[in-house]
Image 1 (tube, rainbow, N blue to C red):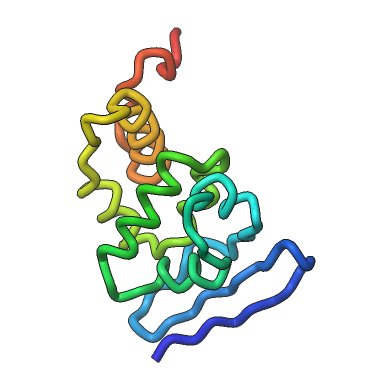
Image 2: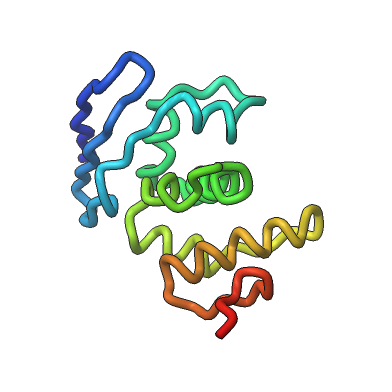
Length: 131
């Protein structure tokens, strides 16, 4: 059984403390606001609750959909990806196939996520540290 403990911070911001029975707690208590809906889901009629529900869903397709939308569109990608359980996020990053459409943008964003969450090497030349 899944439970969600919700604290209302402001009328436009909600902080979710996620706890669920299958083990694993999200990496921190993320703050989700209307920015995420505007940046990533402008063409859908989702609520903040829908986003949280998808992040803890047992349906891997929902998680992949949410992951890709955040990965490609969020201005606060690193923070927003922390909605997922660490193990789920690592699997989503590893399994994500960069699409042929918008390939360069998607590759850069995925590499940023790989570097931050998986400790992988930076592959994007303009992001490498020059010594």
